[in-house]
Length: 326
Figure 1 (cartoon, rainbow, N blue to C red):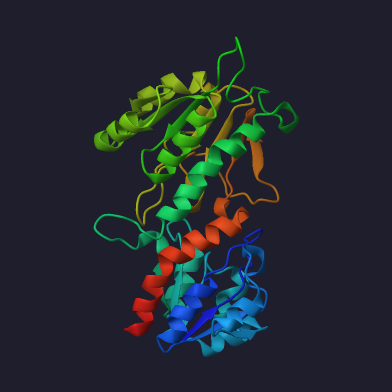
Figure 2: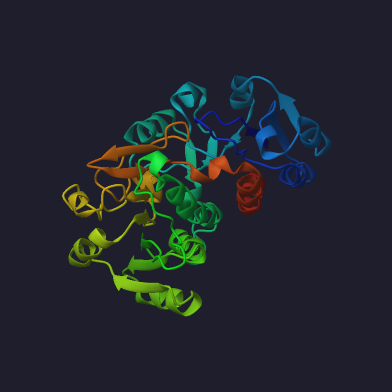
C-alpha cells in the first residue's frame, strides 16, 4: 500500500503523523511511505532520517494525496485539504467530528474511509487518544497557572501559595486520563485540588493514588454551583466517545466564578464543556467573558511536538500497519 504523511497545516501544529521507526516497519512489511518535505522537522526528525528508513520525500502535498491509498495525519483535514481527499481513500487521524458538521459532510461526499484516532477502542480503552490526553492533562495546570498572573489579566495568585499563604483551589471536572494527569500536576504544584466526576471507581482510584491535597466531589449542577465561587482554576476534562461534550458549566454559572479565574476547556475539540467556550489557537489562546479567562486551544499537545509526536506514533503505528496489511 502507498501510505502518505503530509505536513500538518493547522495553526501552530508541529506534530507529524509518523516517525522514522514507523516508516521502517511499514517499508520492511512491503509498503511504500511518502512524506512531505520537512514534515517532521519540528518534531526533531530530518528528511534524511526518513529517507534512511525507506521513505520517499515529496514537496507537494497534492502529490501525496493523489498517489496514496492511506493518509496518516495528526489533526483533522483543514479546509485547504478538502479538495485533496479522494473517493476510497483511507484517512487515519484525529477527527473530532461531533462539533464539525462541515468536515463530516465532506468525508461523506468524498466517500472517504475515515477512522478517528479518538474513537478506536480496545477492550474499553481508547489507546490512540490516551497518549495525547495524558499530555494535555499535564499541560493544562501549567498554562492555567501562567494565565493566573496579573499581567495576563488573571487574579494574580500563585497556584501553590507561599509560606503563610493558602494555595490556590483547582477544580478538575472529569475522572479519566486527562483529569488524572491534570490532578497529578496541579497537586504536585501545591494546589488544593477538587475532582468532580460521576464514575465512583475512577474517583476512588484518584483518592487512593493521589496525595492528601486531592479530594473528590460528585458531579451535578448543585455541587457545581456551590464549588465554583471558591476556585481559582477550572480544568474541564470530560470526554464522551464520539459524542459532543456535555456543557457542565452554563453561561449563567459563569457569574459565580471569581473575577480573573482561569477556565481551561481541554474538551473544546469535542465542542467543549463550558457553554461560553469557543476554539482558540496557540497564537491567541485566551479570551475573557465577564472577567473570567477562557483557555480553549484545540491542539494543546501540538506545542510539545518532540514529546507528543513520539507518544502518538508509538501508539498508532501498529494500527497503521494492520490496516495496510489487510
